[in-house]
Image (cartoon, rainbow, N blue to C red; front, side, top):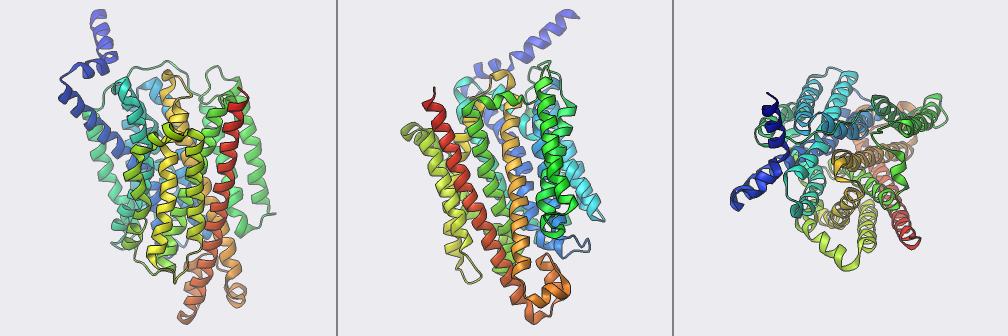
Length: 510
């Protein structure tokens, strides 16, 4: 029996080596199949972040009657759990087996989507979104960890770049696929369709994904709970501000709770013998800079997704399918240029590449903020391409910087750190742009509509005003969307400048 166990262990550990020693065409085909499956999982979980934005107008007008803040929470609940648990998800994969945790994550993802599809009210919908986010947190980091275990050393760089580009493409696929599903007329179809798709992917992963060695690293449930609580408290303060008032008890409690819980999380992680995310890691300037940069890029990109869906439907009169297709110009640079980003880095350096990325991304968002109902779509699409160029340059460059800052034994935690910065940036982007949009929209409404009905969403305003006044409501929304995009664009430029400045200062002090 002991010999059998040793043989099995030896077989598992040597799997990548045996894969590499096969006939070259067969090994390459195996790697392509595995890469395709893992990328499909990434596109699924990231695409769900973007797809639900298309359903916001439908949800606002549905029999659930969500408030403006509830609409933001419907989007952000998934992202918050995704962001905060993705590092524990990667660590769980390191300890219990990456393939097993990946499959468990897909099962939770399907369960949460099913609960969301049948939810009769907002609280149950939020519960479904939370379960789906927990599943996504188990899926994303382990896709990269499985890939890095299975490919030879000379393919790791290309594999990381391909995986990173899927996080950008996933957002666009979510928009297009979500638009096609929502064209059927119900927001529930979006969640229902995810269930069989996830089951098929789970079956494929079970069949082709290799088993990787485990690392006997303890987990930190308390740290995970504190991180989730701190993030929810922070977003609570941001999201509830426009409706409850910035000096209201719930908003002040949210911000105070965020400070306290983040401080407690830091203390717990510093004292842990094996922290999930050691705060001391951020003493490394290159890692700190890359994480801030990744957070900023996704802050801008998913803020755009949130506003774009409603702008094209309300402001331009697009149907939901055409709205989903309308984001495609953003992905053209990602598809065509991601593989060439490394060449630019080698030619001009990391700092210059990142600078160019932030300039394109920030200026693209500011350009989009100049659009209104009369702006021709080709002009809008051109600004999407400009933004997409920035995303294309940033994703693989920053992803490689984060991965290169951690040892191979922490591949799962490293992938989790990348995903945390992405999803936390996405959650902040949705919360901030939703908050700015709501506040500016309400201020831009005609005074009599404000005084008589106090609406906080376009759907609420359209439901309580005469049809002849719909253009005034839409105009107020477009004003709010323009202001919100401008705020996000300027924020991306400012934060991008801080990222580059920090990176250069750290090099000069070495």
